[in-house]
Picture (cartoon, helix red, strand yellow):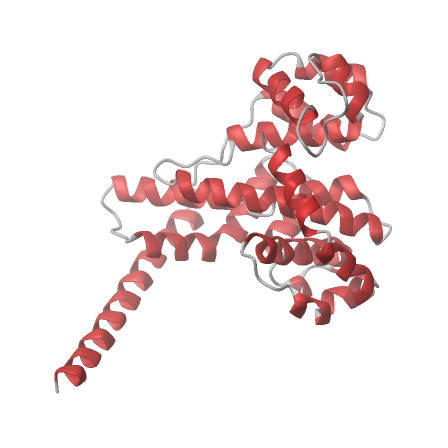
Length: 295
């Protein structure tokens, strides 16, 4: 009898929680619809770095001059240059030497990652979630770049799409904290995480739009979990980001990504299961590179 009552109580409690979540979901939805979101403002150096990173004609001198304006960024570049994945025989002590070792493309990746991490992937009272989200984003970016290269696509564009696919999450968490401070909602941490998962794709599109990022970045934010819904012009890049994010989750959670070998996204990209398996087999290398890039 006691067990029966416990089951009834647990069922009623679940219904109450679902009803409460529905109410809070409606409040958050209205908050977004009424354009009350606080979109992170990128500093001038970040805007210029994103522009330069996308510019195929960018040169090392111009990028170095821009990086020199931010000493924490200089330090980050040098640390990555001396890390296990990117280091050489001799330690690097200056930005000029780092550029010579890394090259302009890798230098741009490190700089963009550093800026975005420090200025965007932060949310009060959600530091642990932000750290996990960022770790996944960096790994997804590297995997997306590799996948794109294999498929004959622009690897730097894919890196940026992978890096920013979850850029809406910090803004959603910040919106939740704002609503909590107004006593408009009352949520458990599990509910907050559920709402962030539900709303971050749409919010990510709005953030990328506010920053005037390329359409492919915006579409990746919105459709990376449902690549079959992406516009025709973004089908391939969204398929890349979809596979990269799923693969990153599998690597970080120590789960088998074998089910991805049957993903329709491979067909979209014309990618053979054997070539995709090669990326799976190289998991440790990608994880190490992501860790080192985040130094």
